Length: 159
Image: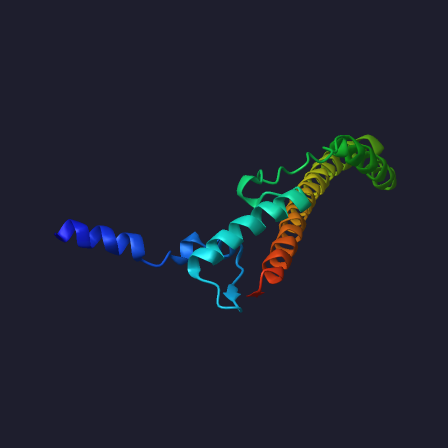
């Protein structure tokens, strides 16, 4: 007897909010025309398929945003060393030893040039990742607009 009561309860219970597709996207769909829970689940499924078809974006199967590989700048240490050597040679000439000044300047310039190159590469990598995330966010936004429009056409208030 208890098994029959449990089966009846499971069959007649209201679907959980987890079954609502809209909740997966941070949207809230309210039945404005007295639609039942099962009708809402069905309508959301139809609108999901319609939005995928119209936008070409399927949030359930959206690949992770791969960051495009930015150009790796090279030669910063060499350029820095050349600039440092030139400056060091000028300073060394004034002090009486241009060769030693050039060597010191080249070392300091090489270190500075390498550090600058590294900062530039990191900045470009960060920019590329942010750009990829922004593009993915735009795609999801496009899907949400199409999905919301479909639900609204079926008599739901979507927020």
